[in-house]
Length: 469
Image 1: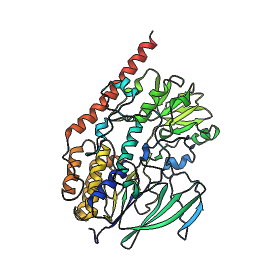
Image 2: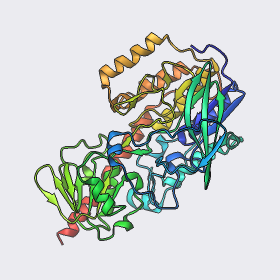
Image 3: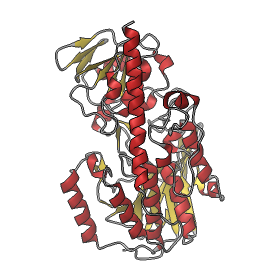
C-alpha cells in the first residue's frame, strides 16, 4: 500500500517504454515533478543508431556468468567530478543500417499514436507494396515524436546515467552521473517513486566456450554479439560461424550468404528455434547447420560431434541478453528474470518501485502502454493494489506454471488475459485510457511472422534453383 501521496517520480530510460511512461504519468495530472534520465544522447533506447563501430568484446567469463555489468563505485562525497569512466556499460546501439522490424508495425503502435506507414524499398521488394514491416529509423522517429510533443522533452535529461537507487526512509535516493567528454559529474536527487523503463536488451550473453577469449584477443573484433553487427559488407569473403537458433541469428546468417564465404556456418543443431519463426531461415542452401561448439583453438572451431570448422575469421553470437540492474542492488535477478514483480510491474516489497517492459515474446510496445498506464494509476492512488499475500501467490503460481526462468516473463499465448487484467486493474478514472483488447492484434502479429517465413522459403527456393543451373 502507498503510505503517502506520490508527488515526485523518476523515470529511468527514454526508449519506447520510457516514452509511454512519460505520457501516462503526465496525463494522470497527479504529480508535481517528473524527471526522466536517459544515458544515451537522445530518445529511442535500443533503436538509436550509432555512427561509429562498437567496442570490441572482452571479459568473456563475465559475459557467460551474466556479471559483465557491475555497479560503478560512487564517490564518497556528492556532488563530485571524476575522470570519465572507461568501464563498459553496453549502451551502444543494437541496430545496423538496413535493419527492419521483424513484426507487423501495427502491433508496435500505441493506442492513440499511429505508427509510420512508409516502408523501405527493400521491404516492398521482399514483401510487396502492403508490407507490414518498417525500417529501424521509423521506430526511432516514432519514439522521438512521442517524447518531443507537449513539451515532454523538457522532462528528459540525456547523457545521464542512473548509477544507484536506494530507499532512505520514505524517499528514493537516486545517484546520477552526467557523462562528459573528459569527466563525469555525479549528484543526487530525491523522489517518492521510481519507474524503471531501461529495457533488458543491452548486455550481451555469450556462452562459455574454451579458447574464445584467446581467439578474440588474437584478432580483435573477430568475436561479436548480434547487437554489434553493422552490416554484411564487413564480412566480404570471410569464413563466418553464427551461433544461435533464434531470429537475430537467422537474419544475420541469411544476410551473410550475400557476402561471406559459403556455406555460412550456423550453430543450431540441438538448440531450440524461435517458436514464432522456426528453422526456415536456416534451410537456405548457403547455410550449413552444426551442433554446439566444444572449444576454439587458433582459428579452428571444434564441435561436440567431433567435427570441426577450419580457418574461421569471425564468430557472431545471436545468443540473447542478460538482465542487468547495476543501479538497483536491492532488486534480485535470478535465472535471467527480475524477482518479486507483481503482474510484471510492481515490485512486491515496495509499490513505489515499478517496472515497464519486464516482459517478452510479442506485442511488447502495446504491453508497455498497458503497464505504464497501470503504473501511473497506482502512483496517483487511483488503482489499488491487492494484499502482499495475493501478490506473492500470483508469482508463486506463475513460477509453478512457467518455471523460475525467463519463460516466467513470456506473455504469449495469454495476451488477451494479461491485457484485460491490467486494463481492469488500472480502471477508467484518470488520464490515458486503455481500449479493450482486440484479437486482431494477435492475428496481425502472427500473420507478420508468416510473411517473413514465406520470404525465407522464397529465398531458399531461388538459391536452390540457382545452385542447380
